[in-house]
Length: 469
Ligand code: UD1
Ligand code: MG
Image 1: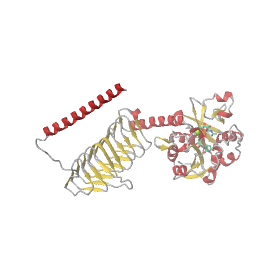
Image 2 (image 1 turned 60 degrees about the vertical axis):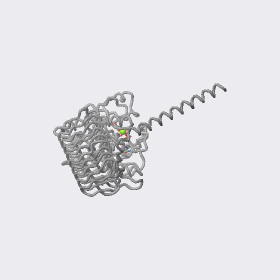
Image 3 (image 1 turned 60 degrees about the horizontal axis):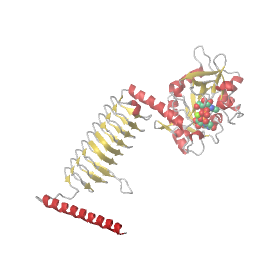
Image 4 (image 1 turned 90 degrees about the vertical axis):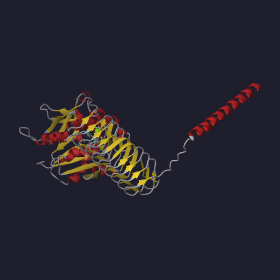
């Protein structure tokens, strides 16, 4: 951006309406804390500095703010008070200051740019002391109302609790996005008072203060769906739904086929290659990368995984963090993968748990295979060499290595390494007794009949006992 800009994100509010031990701005939307969404929208503006204002004693909020500057607002005394706390971190820069609220996860960079342009003026519009992004709210109740003057400029913002009956009817409201001329900001902030219904220092009062000093305040209108401020769990659910709609649309536009988009759940960082097909009822947690030509059948739960090109997954697969799947791999139904690499062309098609392992190129993992990775104390790795064949229902007790092109017999419990090209049995040998079946059947039949007769006798005895009593 040609003119310098600093961004301050307010994230220190108590968030009481969430009724949560977790700070409001850390509640996730599409797999990311709300704060991270706001930061991503701000980062795309390439400001010279981003400062996050957080509550005291919350390492988790500071971590979510990284790598940006983090300052503490020692007491939640209002949005204006929070911005004041950020001033020293701005280091006397004369750059414009954009204020964002950490509870507005749907903000887009495009709208933020419009607010900057409105503050700076363009063509025949002169610069303003500050600019605010507003929107028409279906229900204005939770928002500050924008009071406009005869020219359409902003005169003041009045919070619902302080508004007159007439002002409460205004449906043009404050999104919370404000861009302020940097050189004016310290002076304006100094004049903030807390003589209002909540006894807080309202950021929104900067408008009336600037007007009294004779400055112009601009307003730009945006779409409601972008400015939802999350104050309650209901709002959080609404933000999630809106974000999911947005992410699904972006995926479809990017060339992903979804049989039923409304049932596919995405994370903000889900990445798709070309020609990916996704069946219904699949959830992508954060950190998933899907390669070209991949098909994911329905009912999968995937997080923290890379899926290589032309592989197929599911239906009903659970892929957990640390999984790396190569190209042309088949992961079938009821497979759980965790912290495991599956190399190109390998197959695990039915009902298996593969945790903490490495599966070699073209290896075949039979139905019901278990990588026994945990002994109650430590987690250990299972290595399956390239072209190895693991028979059905084998347990590979880690740490263990199955050599290249080795063959593990079905039903084996393998506790020792298997050499390349070996056949390993880890089960009792089968014994055949020719012609023994008829005698076995006679014996089993006689035993069942004797037991039945004994039961009948016991019942008769009980019944006669009752009659005598
Ligand atoms: C605020 C605005 C309102 C606007 C709405 C948009 C004010 C006075 N009101 O109301 O005009 O329509 O957002 O969503 O600005 N925060 C702090 N420190 C504090 C208080 C709040 O950092 O002392 C942070 C919160 O963490 C939050 C943001 O500021 O991220 C907004 O605070 P919140 O309490 O949600 O304000 P609203 O009542 O939603
Ligand atoms: Mg809010």
